[in-house]
Image: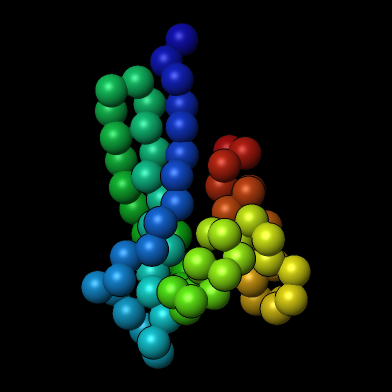
Length: 74
């Protein structure tokens, strides 16, 4: 069985209203696919919340965190 891993990162050259696009990288065995999640966040908040792992203050960040976890579960 091939190993599946996912990782999320910001793409700084894809800005909307001063926020960076959140991208997902999916690895299955030796194959890799990258795509946009369609969501955006300020780079400072991405760093301050440890890539949304500690998002607790802003409703939008909590919603994004839940979205990311849902993507990982699929």
